[in-house]
Amino acid sequence: MTLSIEPVGGADAAVVHAVVQAAFSSRPPLDPPADALHETEESLREALAANGGLVARLDGDPVGCLLFGPGNEPLLLVRRFGVVPGAQGHGVAGALVAAAAAAARSRGHAGMRVYARVELPKSLAFWDHHGFVTCRTEGVLVEMVRLFEIRIPVPTADAAHDLGRRLASQLKAGDLVLLTGGLGAGKTTFTRGIGVGLDVRGEVTSPTFVIARVHPPNGAGPALVHVDAYRLGGIDELDDLDLDTSLDEAVTVVEWGEGLAEGLADNRLEITIVRGVGDDVSEDDPREMILQPIGARWCANDLGNL
Image (cartoon, rainbow, N blue to C red; front, side):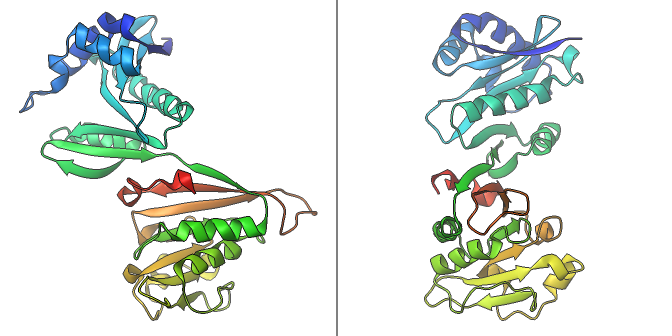
């Protein structure tokens, strides 16, 4: 079978209406019924003309669809997402999600959001599998969000320091930041900027020989816990450290934390520092910071403005 995904507009309302009716009428009865079953060709024509959508075809036959929400929101709303019964299990749904993500990125959105029904655990599991996390539940609806990675060029070490300082304004007690990057990538320089932004006491240096260092706040803000996970044998060792503050009351930055510190929190900010390779790489060579927010904590944050 040949699977294709194509953008659609108002002129394709009849095709989309047929797919929506077939997909949603095959689902278990819901109370209240799904709004999608009340859609008409006219209502879909208006929605598609305003915001567009996608149709999936197997061997030329329309078998899946979705509609996009308003384009002026930070997160692109995906709705009326459905696949007709006979086409399920052929990768149609996953292909629609991938195409929707590509469209959202090309439109400049920071991510996507969907609404799923609490009575449909398979639907919730599907969105979870595709990187969506639950932000809130209201009545029978669960709002789920997937945030895209953010790439920020940092031409110098000073720029990395300044980015850390700016990020600090969006951090709060309980936040976990995982830093990944090779030796000399600038992890400690970036963390030093976070410390300046948080206004904590003490010089932020590499914690290699102490594993973890606590920097108390000068004012009412959170402390900074700076951790080097390179020498930790497991996450239990970090939990067992005799720190002067609770991780719930501090911003925790973990260097070399990838694959180890994720168990500390479902909500975290993973940052990878990428720089050039070779023997001539210096401290001030250009780098790129790749920020991947994970979890409901970041649903309302606009890290793209950093």
